[in-house]
Length: 293
Image (cartoon, rainbow, N blue to C red; front, top):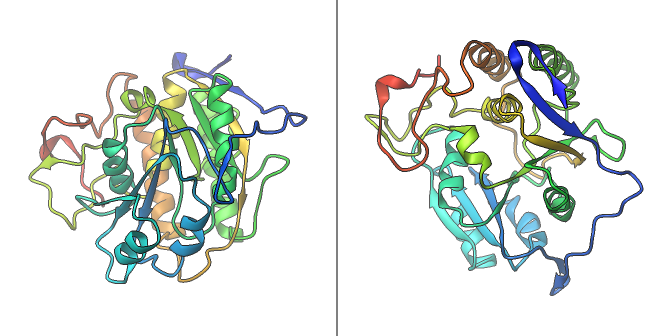
């Protein structure tokens, strides 16, 4: 147990490097996980990347693809290649909103969040599930553990991630090795702790992005899990370059949103945040949520 300033407690353990992920079965050559697992994939204009991702996803679990109002063939490609995938449309703009919409649609006890651009390897899913089965509340992917790595992160993003990671560890007493990485898995009860913006906020518009709806969502989730003192296991993960297209991430503007998130969460209590929004079904007044700058 690691104790941080302000009474924040977080328990983080490392995976046993000698332990192989337990087998989880296979179907038609695909590795599979138990049906109690839900996989959430935010996607916007990823039609060219999805075939390689969908081909490696397990068949015996729930898959939710959250479309960000794509202008390419993202939805058609998904439905053609994997008719079992549930496709929904996000209610606002940004990765955070897409994840919130996807989480609200899941039924599984274990929830995995994975990108649609081919940078996250679906073959690593059993590794994340094994961490949850071993007692973790939250399995956090890390590119900077032995066995992990990245062929995609730029020098400026690496430096920014290191600096922001250091700030979080100092403020919350956590030993995280990789703050800004979106390949994670968690037990369903973590949703109560995350308190993400509701997909349905009264007065919000489809193209709008509220604070918490953007790329800062990964930091928001990580910090709130730490503040709640839940058990976290970091899982080594390798980030490949996206197959096609360019990332929607902006190192400067999204870095500032992450910094703002860290600051806002430090000032908030464990029970609420400056971006308080009811999760997941009750309508929330828009005035309770700060708009993105």
